[in-house]
Amino acid sequence: MKPGTGPEDSPTRTALLDAAEQVMLEEGYAAVSTRRLAARAGANPALVYYYFGTMDNLFIELFRRGAERSYRRQSEALASPQPLWALWEAIHDQSHTALTMEFVALANHRKTIRAEIANSSKRFRALQLDEVTRVLDAYDYHSETYTPAAVVLLMSSVSRFLRMEEAFGVDAGHRDVTALLETLLRELEGDPRPVDRAAVAEHPGCRS
Image (cartoon, rainbow, N blue to C red):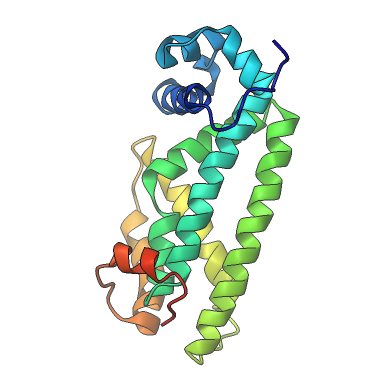
């Protein structure tokens, strides 16, 4: 059995990735092991080695899978009638943030994961900056304070920091800083409206 040569479209491979995601969310990355994954996926532990070669490769594949989902969601958000509200919602999603935090912690101990996160973060930042610049230009909004980079960094850093504090039961000032950011969004796009996700998926190229 040659390591890391299992077919990528295998149901067993998908089940092992699903199991790794569940364990990370429930117990943290340190609880992920070949035996735990195999037990959850109903597979032989040797298959982890067969499909991924190493645990680092498994973590990288799991991160890439989640990153692709997030990238698609943010791309759709930025193509919606209220792209800034939709981007804020996508960034602020608790479940994605929780898993991301586990990967950040894992990256402190594994250089390969750190490199993968760095490359993915640059890709996301490029998308966000290009699209938010386009959106603000379309709104004819130009500010020396709320530049496209400032808006993107405010959304990302505020959301991540608030989620980290909430995990420890700390929420003092959260409502105020959220209201501050959302005041700008209201000035540009009005109150948030329900998103017709089916329509966005059907017409991903639509613009405000």
